[in-house]
Image 1: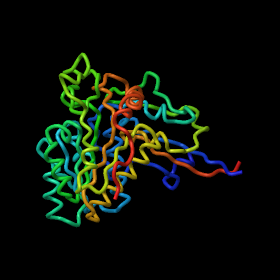
Image 2: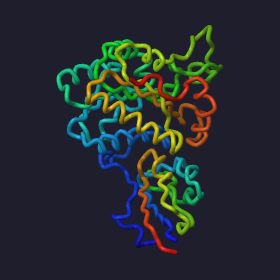
Image 3: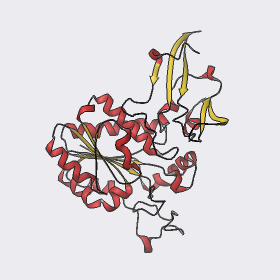
Image 4: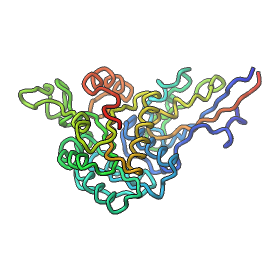
Amino acid sequence: MENIISPENIVYQKPKLLNDEHMHYCPGCSHGVVHKLIAEVIEEMGVTDKAIGISPVGCAVFAYKYIDIDWQEAAHGRAPAIASAIKRLWPEHLVFTYQGDGDLACIGTAETIHALNRGENIAIIFINNAIYGMTGGQMAPTTLMGMKTSTCPYGRQADLHGYPLKITEIAATLEGTCYVTRQSVHSVAAIRKAKRAIRQAFENSINRRGSSLVEIVSTCSSGWKLSPVEANEWMQEHMFDYYHVGDLKSI
Amino acid sequence: MAKMKGAITVNTERCKGCSLCVVACPLNLIQLADKKVNLRGYRYVEQVNPEACTGCTSCAIVCPDGCITVYRTKVES
């Protein structure tokens, strides 16, 4: 047993770019997995010096504390606008935004859609957990029909709150996007697929092929009032019926 | 025949006890520590029956906080 635990036998460890800072996310949060995937992909691509992330407002507001690359914090929802400017000034760099559904699909809808429609050479990582996690579990534009949140305690109703917004489907219809996909991180297989999708999006940014959007259907165990394991099960039962996982556009 | 033998180490101070690795392990070799918590008050996970581990890395891949390091080697049986 002791002789197995030695550095030459390591087959998996925390990526070095993900630093030792304690992440403030709740136990089992999908953000942690996606942070880890981003750090792994940047490490594997060898573009640590060329990677620039734009962090959002929301739970992932402190993303810049956890991954050791260059970051810029954006005003609420304006990450794609800042990313556009950075990518135009540094066309050789990998520029990506990391946004939640409150940031990207609500206050930042205009910036997101126009940046994607202009075909800015940026990658957008979109974490969709159908709720506002940081502010206390309020209804988001992506909240499912009938889903209970603190601001729709009787469940989302179409006549009162409208329908859940499928921003990824909208993005797939835009001329400027080259890669639009929806993934999840609830199982080993799904995490591997999500990693490949993130890598594809980052390569598109570096090679200036157009805009990429990677939506990650995620959990919010605190907002959904479930344990992390139950939240993953709830997501598979309810979220995937509305948010179908898979590539929507790849050119 | 050569057999894969694995081992894991858990960064217990970083672990938040979310239990995602507990359900991800195909051999059910991980469980929450009994009546033990880290400095932040989280019950962390630990390996049970470490002899059976094959080093498949499932637990480490699903860990949101990157707490698990996996080692693997071939042993002749």
